[in-house]
Length: 450
Image (cartoon, rainbow, N blue to C red; front, side):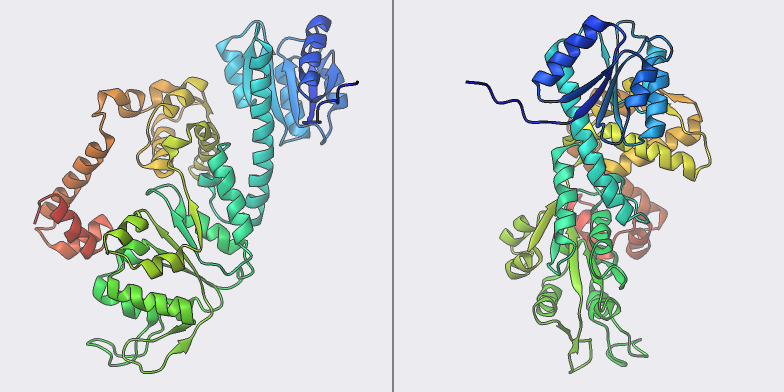
């Protein structure tokens, strides 16, 4: 009985001038289920190149056209092509050059079939992910989506969830640590929705004093309170027909939570000082960096509002849980930052990437972006290496191993410094720290600064 042929897993163009090596690699790849197009020279490979090729594997040293020249020409012809360089004579300059030209990986002979197949599978998966993310980026081209870039399964799930939920009116709750890109996810959902041409209004609960949240969200009538000289529409009315993004929703007072729930369930809002409700057609997307389920258990957040917001939940993983994405994020950020600052785009060495992958990034993608921006502006070099990274990133073990304690200490010091600078003026201190006065008081109590 004949054995069924393996399922087709993709088409690979293989360029290798040594016939015995070419035959051996072709056999390994075909046995794993890939279609292989073998080529003895770089020029022959270029003639065979087409949009249906998912991966190019090329020897570095070949007559007529070497692997780097082939890689360069191939990427010009098929920009999205994934490429892998193999060689028996690896050098640091050639590795750097290959990575600068966009090679996914660099294999040094001798390597085992499992080594080869591991790289091929990861490169193929990267190609599929890039295709999905590029399609998403094209549809939200005016939105920064650095945080959506990555090869990790978690980020692929996020991108797919955005696409699936965007066309519907369902409420979405986005959870994640500070700096993971929650607002970017929300904006992507709006941009891909049927409401994309309608208003997108963002409201940050932590940035508004507690006594003003209700009038800001629902509006107020003239004379509703001291200083209310005219009727003012709230954020719900401003977002009518579009999307209202409620950021840091966990900071809402319980009394406001009840009114928000009423608005979500009925589609009506009651302005402060009014006796008549107003109909609104608003899709609400919410985000938080706190654990709302825990807040419900502690009676700090209404269970009914939590379930109403948590119709669809998207959890953004912290960067420390997806280190495999750091290389792609770095490439994207360096390209964008170099363009923003009118600087030549430098090459980032593999050793620098490896060092960054060992760091925890407590500030997530925001911290990564800031670190790269600092390096680009201060160094202005053509090649960035591990030595260009700040000491705390190069040698994280020299810091306190308890990152949480480090962050708490840094936050406490920042609050103390701001209080001294503003002569203990709580409002001025909160404004300087870009947090609400309510949040400032809570943090001061936590750190014993009251």
